[in-house]
Image (cartoon, rainbow, N blue to C red; front, side):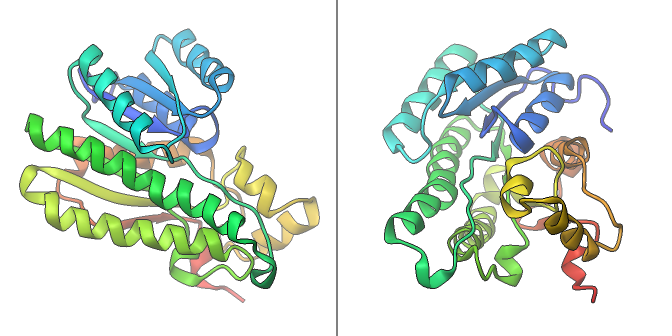
Length: 257
């Protein structure tokens, strides 16, 4: 969608960059000229994603860490800045998800998802935001959201609550950091093909068909479509957009009967 070189000389950190939506966004950012830093817990998965990016001529490096670990995030940011000089963009795509009846959700299950989705997003956003403020020149951040944050999730209350927290955090920081030229937005994908989220939430063909019955456009969204939208929000073309949610769900949130 954007022209080649749109992110030339930019550095983008992508959490959850070893697979799914995070990887797709990383691939597109690299194609558009950014140096992409893939962040995730599994080095093997990061290496595979990095190889795919490098094979297409992209500039990429990896950092294996758990976004729940504040000190690890701080060390990663310091290392990236020391090596590459700056961080211009952050994509918060690290996530955790599973279905469970709320009455049966364990304290550990709640904590695990909230720690990854909300606390991990906070750690990365605050630490990289501090760097952007100190460096000057602004920057842009997107976090991957969910319609559950707006509509609720009866069997995903942990994830819905964490994602709602990310929305509130994004709006709060957009107001606080706008004077520094830092923009923050939430990208809300619908049912996205080739992702663990669809595999977890729609476990068989019947469940998937039932899910698609509620999508007016009648299909899954591609990872490339999500990546195109993400790069638009991150880019200079979205320079007057901050503190909002872009929903790309084929109309599913309309609640068609």
